[in-house]
Amino acid sequence: MARPGHGGHQAGGTPRAERGGLGGALVRQWPWAAVVTLVALGLVLVALRAWRPGLGLIGGAMVVAGALRWALADPGILAIRRKAIDVPLFLGVGIAIIVVDAVATTVL
Image (cartoon, rainbow, N blue to C red; front, side, top):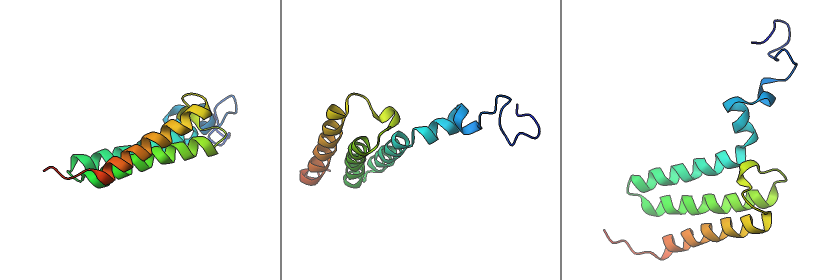
């Protein structure tokens, strides 16, 4: 609990956002949160039978993940392996999903 007169800081003087918790974790892991949000929205579209826009969004999210992994010095948990492995894998998966979306024919 914060002590009165310390402006929301804990007894040790550490601001809440730096201490952790869900809010602090999302702030630190914003690249991952952004990619997961895009993938979740794509899955919702697929579930609503709008599979082409859904797959496009999921593929785009993977391309965004690759770009963020390449551009950011500290991408948080978006960094799974070395950058030389992560970037091509994210980009490759994203482009593959977008190509499959573009060339697939509607069966239903």
